[in-house]
Length: 127
Image (cartoon, rainbow, N blue to C red; front, top):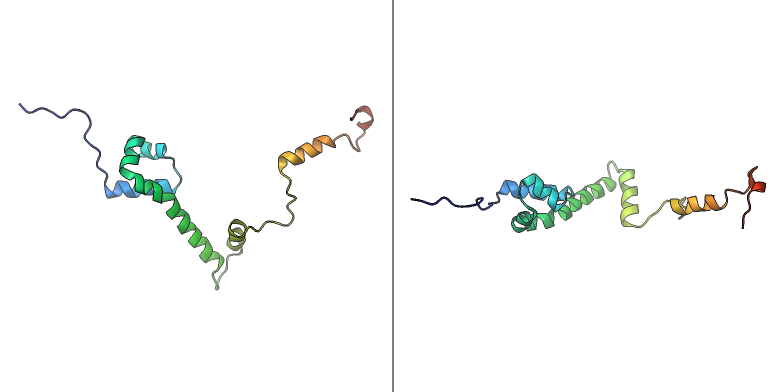
């Protein structure tokens, strides 16, 4: 009498699985989300697909950066928006009209000076 094996069969990754994991990683999904899509546990995902998990996002970023650079530097039809984005993201350019003050600081300033120049200012005691 032959015994049946116990438990689940061992996981075997296919090339299709590897491509899918790499694509999902490139799209920015977390490891637990990828494992859910692949119907495996996160430890099994990391065990069988570690290279794909590590390479997915950097390779996708490189492709997008290359594409953006080509659009920004195309001599026949340059894309001004792509060029502006590239200079802001890579060369540290900023809009000149920016005050450097964040929303929180702006709200605080308005709160401190709300009493100035209003008909209610005579009723308020400001220290």
